[in-house]
Amino acid sequence: MSEVIYNRIAMLRAERGISRRQLADALGVHYQTVGYLERGEFSPSLHLALRISQYFEVPVEVIFSIDPFPRIGTAQTPADAQRSA
Picture 1 (cartoon, rainbow, N blue to C red):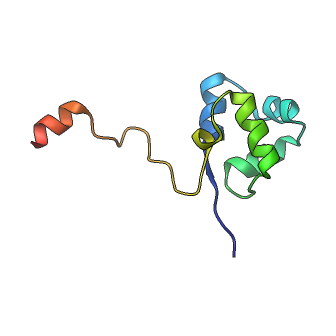
Picture 2 (picture 1 turned 120 degrees about the horizontal axis):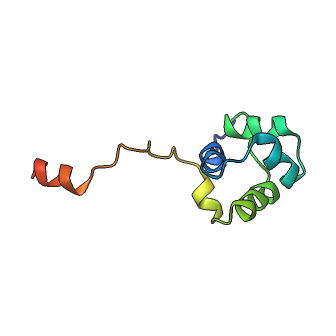
Picture 3 (picture 1 turned 180 degrees about the horizontal axis):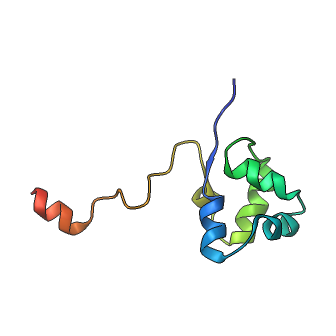
């Protein structure tokens, strides 16, 4: 049984202007490993997940989840809530 681990690595890289190769070099992995992680084709070891978290300086649960992350822009804004009330 394969368990899916969802992640926000690509989003964090894009926000910070970091290439896959730069992240891979910082983590000591092959750049293709970063691609596999981002696409959900490879689940990181706990050690690698913690290193990624440390690199981006955010808690590990900000990056990884066993549940899909909500899409950006789908959350209801306060104005939307008032209109529907």
